[in-house]
Length: 168
Image (cartoon, one colour):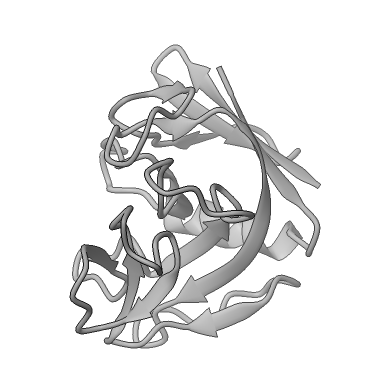
């Protein structure tokens, strides 16, 4: 299966064949990614790798994808010059990183996308995920974000080998 993300008149839409759903994209829009911190949601077709979830907030998502619970000390390195750039890390971590255990609920369910991971290229961009959207669908830092019910619904349909296509 392929998930498709496209610009729409009033933002962006995501569809997996069940009808388009509103989604949020990066503050820099959908475009060719220029580098770390640009806020761009990258154009391209990317493999869907695995799912992370907050076990204190939601039940284990139903999906055929690999699933892991996040812990309070989980992070994701976003420091281009670090050996663990664009990879999970344990906190505390000296280099720049994102906390995966967040108070704002955006990472209650996270789908790891295969952007800049095979191989990792320093500075190309990191932590491009499919995750929970803010209630107002405000922009992300470059990820794609859906309402939690929509995210859980698409997870039920995904299998290893599926992809996400992000297009203009």
